[in-house]
Amino acid sequence: MKKQLTLTLIVIVSIGAVYAMAKFIKMDTFPFAWALNFLLMGCVGFFSDAQQSDFNSPYFDEKKWERGGEIYEYLGVNVFRRLLVLVGWEKLTRKALPIGNDTASLSKLYVQTKKSEQNHIIIFIIVLGFNVYVALKFGFTKSVWLLVLNVLLHLYPILLQRYNRPRIKRILRLSERRNSCDNRDPI
Image 1 (cartoon, rainbow, N blue to C red):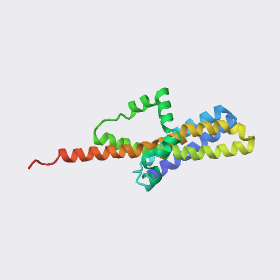
Image 2: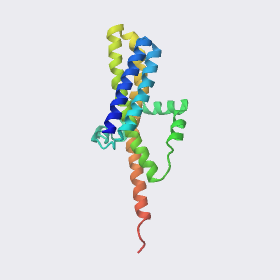
Image 3: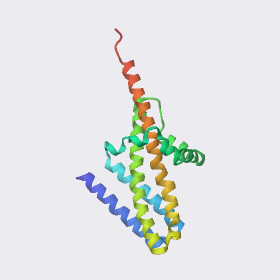
Image 4: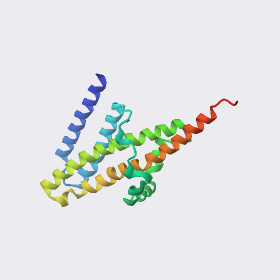
């Protein structure tokens, strides 16, 4: 009951914050697009932390058409990865979530990719709704900032999580296998 109350309160506060921001910043401007994305990142982050999901949905499993990640490479995910390194984002995230070569660290990283993907999907959908509204009310050119930031801040991170997760899963399996071999009793 407490969890549901917390989640409901986060949603209500988030809606109120977005509404207040829409009242004080013109919706067809870059500052609104920028602020909306980062406000939603904070709100959705709080929501997913309070949700404490185990992320066992089959949605997060690799699909046949994703095997090898070629589709993501074609869509430029490696360029986006280099951009993240260039702007320092990779260094920042490694401080917050260091990658060790132990199974627990890899397992935490694997779950984090699911959590991050879920958060970006939620934000992508919300911002897309604002994008459509602004395009219809003010014209497409006034909604371009919402579209560009939505693609850069949410669509590409979703693609990156889907690209990285199978690789992390393979490394995690190897680590688990190595640990099980190390823990066997010698005969």
